Image (cartoon, rainbow, N blue to C red):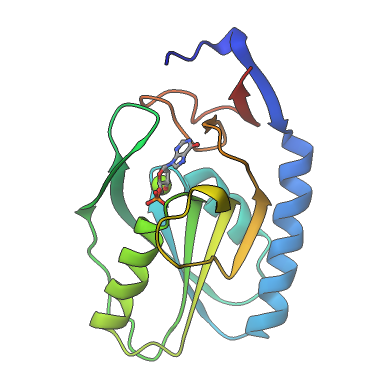
Amino acid sequence: MEIKLEDLKVLYSEEQLNTRIKEIAQELDNFYKGEEVTAICVLKGAVMFATELVKDLNMPVKMEFIRLSSYGSGTSTSGKVNAVDIKLPDLNGKNVLIIEDIVDTGLTAKFLTDFIHMNFNVKSFKFCSLLDKKITRKVDIEPDYYGFEVDNRFVVGFGLDYDGYYRNLRYIGYKS
Ligand code: IMP
Ligand code: MG
């Protein structure tokens, strides 16, 4: 499959994304009640979502960035998670919030959940994803917070890429 800009249809507009992100931030504010949070952005896909989301949080926030990859250059997952760069500070006793772009097979979410719990005794652990492709799940895992559910189609934009492209779009699109 090849994806051209002119073939893209808007699935979630910039306005819909902004509104939903503010709602999620409100839910997170309600949960953390002013306690400090370490927000871990999973690069590269979650970069847009994470930077928008944290601006609307009202507790003290530390941001960390890790880089994982599971997709190759195509539109289906390789089935294997690569920890490209996963250096983190001491998270013992911390409220840890993972920020992802999309949960698809769930392998990345499972890998990260296990990784954090194996290495740290955290105060709390929450997984927040902009999108949730529930239908393609291969492992039993659900994000604690998510923005929108998407059906089984490949989406791009707002951080999500096709072969490295389209992360810069203001909206989430799909190939029509
Ligand atoms: P999972 O490990 O299969 O859950 O896949 C997670 C990663 O695959 C996400 O963080 C994305 O980077 C990528 N991914 C899954 N579905 C899509 C999609 O529709 N468009 C772009 N990237 C996707
Ligand atoms: Mg990703």
